[in-house]
Image (cartoon, helix red, strand yellow):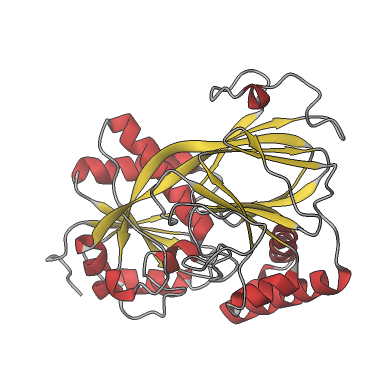
Length: 364
């Protein structure tokens, strides 16, 4: 099929995503579409490929096939390519493959691409409205066990600049959490690495998440010991309720397969944050919430309640004195004791599918 009348769209596919093989077959049936594969082990290749596409057409837009981690990787590659070429940022849209796909939900593209509609999708991407999505940088400094604040650190001093003491800079654009929800995601990650074939479909993946969630419900592991975690937002200490078992930093209000933990549009309950701005994906603010456990997660999914609103702010500091499961835009690991400082980096342009939007989250 010739799609020559569609403005330029470059497609980047994560070949390991569920459904990627079918999308690649669809793309091969089209002419005039540039396709690149995401290689996690060689990000410089994607940066070069994005740069080449932008040199050929400064107005090109990108469509990324995969989950939230794929979108984050492609967004970083586009940003680096634009910086190298001194070009304005190119707009990006999601093609939701696999499970989760939280940003795709928020932007109106849905939780999963069903196949067979790529020409129409490419037209929508090429002509859709563009909004700004905040990008967040995370300074991480490793410290000794039980000693999260004993060493001099730029995190405690409030400096936004890294020093030799800061191990590395990370980043996210959707969410950053630590606790029981990250533990569930991490168990799924380990299962997928151990047995890729057991995670080869959306149905299987959701079954695994349900299984690991049930295990958490019955085990009731305590992840956030009060003497091992400290939270500050915009320089002010934020006390954690005794029963909180996960802390989430939210830039978009969809996570854990479509849950709005903040409860956008609902009034606050007694004891939690009472005054805040209406959440927006491009306002330079993060919403910080705490959730008690899997039972709370299920209640929130059914919209019977929302998570405990802890804070809203521009700079978030977290001090960990013990190891804990962490996830950032769907990527998981066990974090050893460290200090985190999260602050605004930039904004990235994303394409919205207004016809498909269902979530109550402000876009600008």
